[in-house]
Length: 92
Image (cartoon, rainbow, N blue to C red; front, side, top):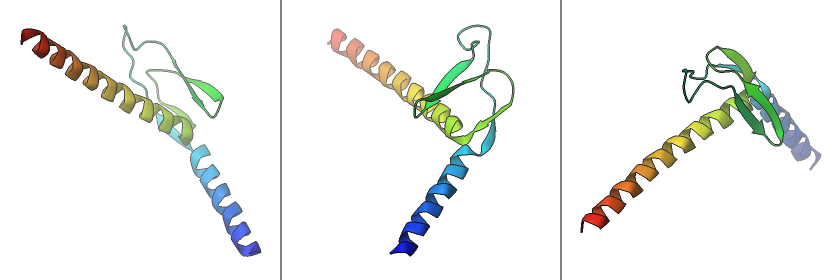
């Protein structure tokens, strides 16, 4: 039974190391909507990621940023579909 506990602790340490490993990201920057730095938080701990330059951040924050981008894309597409459906309903 102690062996199982040791493996569990080792696995947790390994996962923690993986999520804390530094990765390089570069967030899109323009002079309009995407000009400000981005605040991202994971489990209540936040950081600010600058736009327009390559920076190294812990993988857990990069994953959160990627998930946020995917959610924004999904929401925009869903909104367009709802708008099209509403227009089609109004025409009928």
